[in-house]
Image (spheres, rainbow, N blue to C red):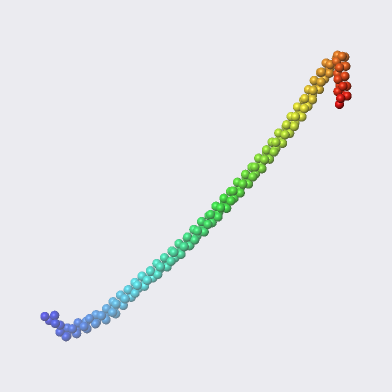
Length: 164
């Protein structure tokens, strides 16, 4: 039962042992433990701050990337629009040149056809004139060989001359 009801001496020595133990722990254990906890708290806070900064930097980079993508899309659209305009212009110019060249070829062909037609008409006229002269020569030779026929021809020519 001595243990259940401690005596004053036991309480005194236990209190002194406890105080000494607290002083030793404070001097050698609590300060290093508190410093370790403080260092741990500081490193955790530093890590949290770095994570926050990293999140902010990522948000900023994401925003910048979106802006860069938006600008790239706008530039791409402008380049495509310009390319379409250049293509349309080239096609239009080629079409105009083709039409002009076609008109020139058609006009040249018309001129050539007209010149050939005139040449053919002149050649036909020349041949008709030559044939007419040959026919007239043959007819006159035949008719002028007979004196009676000559008189009839002269009379008919005189009559025609009087009428005109």
